[in-house]
Amino acid sequence: MSAALDDAALAAALTAIDPAGLGGVWLRARSGPTRDAWLAGFTQSLGARCKRIPSAIDIEGLIGGLDLAATLAAGKPQWRTGALEAARGGALVLTMAERADPAIAACIAAALDARDAFALIALDEGASPEEAPPPALLERVAFWIGLEDMRNPTPCISGESIRAARTAIVEIADGDLETLCAVAAAFGIGSVRAQIFAQRAARAHAALRGAARVAEEDLRIAARLVLAPRAITAPPEEAAAPRDAQPHPENASDQTGEGEAQGDRLVAATRAALPPGVLAIMAERNLARMRAHGAGAKARGASRGRPIAARPGRPSAQRRLDAIATLRAAAPFQRLRGRLPGGPVLLRRDDFRIRRYEQRREATSILVVDASGSSAAQRLAEAKGAVQLLLAQAYVSRARVALIAFRNAEAAMLLPPTRSLAHANRKLADLVGGGATPLAAAIDAAHMAALAERARGRTARIIFLTDGRANIGRAGDAGRAQAESDAMDAARAFRSAGFGVAFIDTGVRAGRQGEALAAALGATYAHLPYVEARGLVDLMGISRT
Image (cartoon, rainbow, N blue to C red; front, side, top):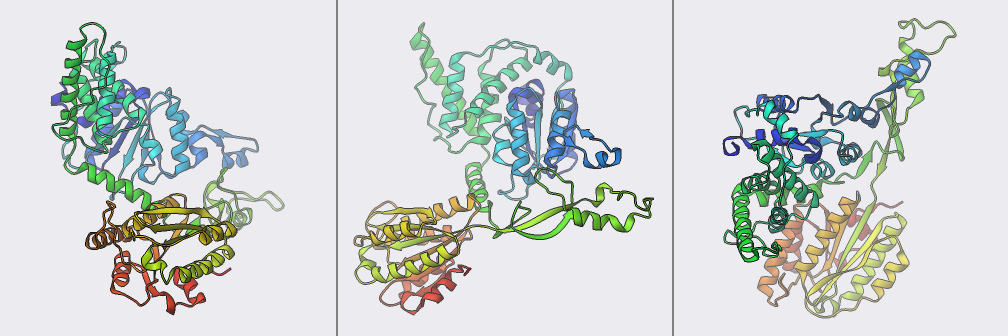
């Protein structure tokens, strides 16, 4: 049966058999007949209501709360039922899940953790790798399915088979559980939820077949549908599953050989299920999400900051009502609404206005200082003076400062992001020079630090103070040619992240290495002797407040 069924239809059927245990489906597909046919088939298989909600739903609409418009009209509190309660016992269909607010995702994730509520169908229409539902939702659904390449509606499994499978009791051996865990480890999947989903999917598939015990076929289906889409690494084709599973006491040698062979076959089948290039695509998608997170310079809609124009909306715990703007919006319509002289102002839902604020994101200046012999001999003292100016200006603007120094064979974070000027000055004073120049390692360290700051919602600015003359490669081997090639590769990868970068050449005279590296980084280039104190601040774009 399984070989003849489309994976999308099979995922729908298994979710309908065990909706609470499997969590649901992440369905990546454009709106159209194919997706509609899949949803119709899933609804028919589930045999229960599917509550559809938009990604822009507010918290009250999701979990319920006071209906302000009805309360004002009735003169007494009126409550409304949230979408989570309405979906209980069925499924919650989240449209355009790639745009879901993290707070909404957190509420849905908490409800999914209850395991007695509903299955989630996250509809993803994202056009680029960084557009995806929040990780909190993806972690809690068993199946990640794509319909991009499908042209025909997926088949629907009969409701009788699914109803019979729901009441079936299926056993799974300890050795099979160990095999699934070993396969997950072979593909770099560290999530315990993925392993639990895999064993529940295997049991649901065995129940769909009418079997009382999980067989290798069920394990293969579970690995293909649950584990393969989550793969981070792929073992070589000749590699087998890990051999550390413990055999049962009886017939230990036979069972060991059988378990290893089954693990080998399962790893090979899962590897074959990986679409071409999927690992590279997933790695790029994860990096793109990190790059895209907190990419703006300002955050609008925050709860504090500089007030900006109010907008129509429904008041909630996160959205404060702007009473003046609301009354101003309702005033022109009072005669049409039949308001009596001296009577209360008649409000409608469309009159409500929500306060909005603009809040500038916090900034972090990451100073990457060359402490190697090529710079330390004549220029480290001048570099320290330049860093002192940046530290002082960053302190005035309440920005954070981080310090990365590189010499010999490594780049070290001497100072994590901080606002303590005294602490930063002490670290800088203790900085000693000498040794080789691992420039590629320094660029990689700055890249990771900047991504971490972006993930925290801060704007990262990176300042490189070096002469650009690398002589230690990424592998730690000496050799100027390889070191310069590695540095250029690291710089090009850094540039694609879109950070604000300045390259301050600390060489005795401006050299081609520094200019070429600054171009590869996409950085603003300057030679230290020609950069005055105030000009250095302008070069970095640090605001004066």
